[in-house]
Structure formats: structure tokens, C-alpha cells
Length: 462
Ligand SMILES: Cc1cc2nc3c(=O)[nH]c(=O)nc-3n(C[C@H](O)[C@H](O)[C@H](O)COP(=O)(O)OP(=O)(O)OC[C@H]3O[C@@H](n4cnc5c(N)ncnc54)[C@H](O)[C@@H]3O)c2cc1C
Image 1 (cartoon, rainbow, N blue to C red):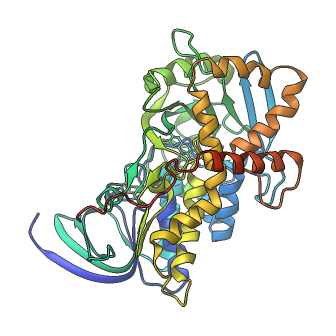
Image 2 (image 1 turned 30 degrees about the horizontal axis):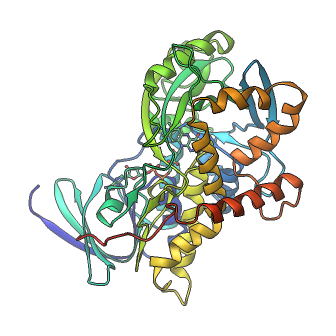
Image 3 (image 1 turned 120 degrees about the horizontal axis):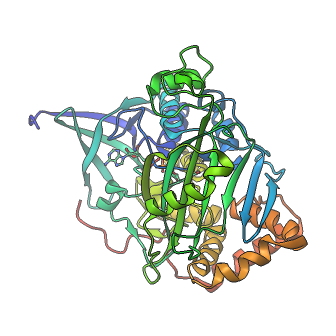
């Protein structure tokens, strides 16, 4: 570091430019706020993910008005679930979210969202890692320090939105605590060539066996990516995704291969009491080998792995003028590991809260956890309870065959897929929706006191 200190002021400072941060920057800039969007990385950058976009995420992208910019042509119609000797096809339900999903490599998706944030008026700081935070006696954030280009830069802000992902380094400095006694995920993903990359269905294998044949508490996935390129020159790849002429060296059809790419990965559920005893990268390799023939898969490439806190199992997510969103607030569905939709949704919600009450938003300390609870509390607690049951070694081998085999599966699995995807809306009045809501309310009452965005126990020094 050179010791040079630059100080600037902004209305809203957003730290982390994944889907949560970029979407928050877009909403805040459109609301007329001055916004700095800072990320430790420079874009385009990779992010370990399955790249799947549920109808919920698609809905949110349309609300943001960026679907045309961030999506390619590829769309999927639903899910094919496999395991225990059978398969079930489950179209996306026809809810207010729409019945269409997609999948876009995060290198492209996130870079396009960042571009949209800059277009909306946010000032982008790439390569800026938040390294310290200063608060006043009431716990309000006054200033965040960044290291950027070897120099320290300080940003004073009225509001801070923390969207720095799973590890949430900045969140930790502010008192965020991850409760590992609750269920969390460990997962790995890869990209493989496959001639089935344009298939309109995503695939999940619920009978995920390791090399010793033991059923793991999780699932494997294959998400076709259409014509989206992987690797190569990300800028050229992005141009191709948007329909430009430059295909990039690694795009389907370029470099002599007609096969596109699929995102192939697997994840297992874990708790501190029952940690998944599995090496996810080895499990992925075993899973890919089992699917190779059916999908004419190429070798697994770009293999990465990560952990996922889930279902709101963190505390200390807000202070007087700051709030955590997206993965930083553990807004990940415990039953399928998806979080892009919640990242986009929590971005919109937090900006609305900040802009409420005559533009000053009031104190977020209790208001933000209360809003998260209202929107996701019941669904996440119920999903966490079911996911915890899956970590019992005998649970899945016992119930899996009941759910996937025979005529009952045609009824059970569409309902299960809808519930797993949290695609039940408040407007839905059918039996499945009513049972889900009732079970959610009962679980919430029964598990009152379990960690769900509770206030920070101790306000640590900055
Ligand atoms: C293996 C795997 C598969 C998954 N598959 C899916 C899927 O198919 N569909 C789905 O919806 N979800 C999926 N998820 C979850 C999804 O990836 C996350 O929910 C989503 O990325 C959350 O977005 P975010 O913006 O909160 O965080 P992120 O996307 O993680 O973005 C956080 C950003 O913060 C930046 N940052 C971190 N620290 C700092 C710092 N100190 N200063 C400045 N910047 C910082 C990082 O560089 C990063 O760009 C998967 C997750 C995993 C691990």
C-alpha cells in the first residue's frame, strides 16, 4: 500500500457486485440515489454456481427490466427428476412468476448485471476490497475503507448494503454470525461439453451415490446452457450470448465442436452434528462418470466447490443504516441450494425499505430482519426442517423410492418440485399451497427461537 488515502461520499454504498449487489445498485440508482457499487473482483469473474435461473429469478429480472441484457436465447420448461429406479418430468408450475426458467454461466450473467448497474447510474469500483468499517456509538456505519489499486480509499455513506456473498467478510466485521448447527450445503460444479446442451429440461438426480454406493443427502444436477459459451474470452463470449458476431474461442460451434456446454454439479446437506463426510469434487467426478454415456459428456472442466449457509441461518444482518442481503443474509433455499432469485428479491426489498419513510428509511436494525421473516420465514424454516431430516442417513433411502416410483410419484413429485423451488405464491389457493402454508406456520411456531436473522448478540468493535 502506498499510504495514499482518498475519501469520497455517497448516498448508498453497495459492497459486492454479484446478483444481489448489482440489483440493489440498479434499484437505488433508479430511485435517484447516488450509488457506489464496489467489488473485490474485476468483472467478468467466475462464481461457483449451478447457473440455474428459476421462474422466480426470471420474474425478478423482468421486473428489473434487464432480462434482455442478461439472458441469452436459452429457456427451459421445468425439471426432470431421477432416482430410485424411476424418473418424473415436472414442468414449471404456471404461477405469477411465469413457467419459464433459464441458465446462464455466471461469468456472463454477473458481468451483464454489473453493466446494467453502471448504465442505471451506479459508479462501479472494480478491484476494491472492503477492508474495514467505522461505526458511531449507535452502531450506524459512517465509513468503509477499501484497498484499491494499492491505495486505501474511504467511502462515507448514508446507507450501506452488504452483498458480499457466503463468507461475508464485511458482514462479519459488523457482527454477522453463521449458525452451523442449522443445515448448510457443500457443493461442487463443473462445465462439460454435451450434445444435449440445448435440451429444454434441467435434470436432478436425487439418488446421489458416492463411489462406495452410499446414498448422499443431496442431489446431482445437469443444467443445459443452450448456446452459452464457457471460458475463452468472456467479453467475446458475452457478445455472442447477446447475439453478436464474435463467437469467442470456446463457444459452441467454434474450435470445431458442435457440442454446447452443460453445468454439472452435486451438493450435499450438512449440519455441525451430522457433517456430510464427502469430498464433493470426488463425488462430482463419480456422478459425471455415471451420466457420461447418457449425455455424451466431455471431461469435467473448471471444477470448483463452495459452502452455502442456507435458510436464513445467520444473525446480525442489520444495523441502524446498514443491511445484509443475498447470500450474506443466508437467503438460499435449503431444499435446492438456489439463491439468485432471493439475491434479486432482497435487493429490491432493501432499497424499498431504505427509500421508505420520506426517503430516510428509518432504523433498519429490527425492520430488515422483520421484513425477511415476513417474506421468507415460514418457507425457509420448513425447508430447513425437511433438509435437516435428509441429513439422517436412513431418511432418503426410505422415502426416495416412495416419491419417485409408481403412480403416486406423478402426484407427489410435481408438488415436491413446486415446494422445493418455493414457487407457491400468496395468491395460490390449491390444496398443496394450503398444506404448505399451514405446515410453515406450524413449523415457525414449533421452532420459535431457532436462528433466523436474529439481531447481533454482541455489537463488536468496528
Ligand atoms: C455449487 C453451487 C451451485 C449453486 N447453484 C445455484 C443455481 O443453480 N441457481 C441459483 O439460483 N443459485 C445457485 N447457487 C447459489 C448462488 O450462487 C448464490 O445464491 C448467489 O450467487 C448469491 O448472490 P450474491 O450476490 O448474494 O453473492 P455472490 O454472487 O457471491 O457475490 C458476492 C460478491 O461480493 C464480492 N466480495 C466478497 N467480499 C468482498 C469484499 N470484502 N469487498 C468487496 N467485494 C467483496 C465477491 O467478489 C462477489 O462478487 C449455487 C451455489 C453454489 C455454491
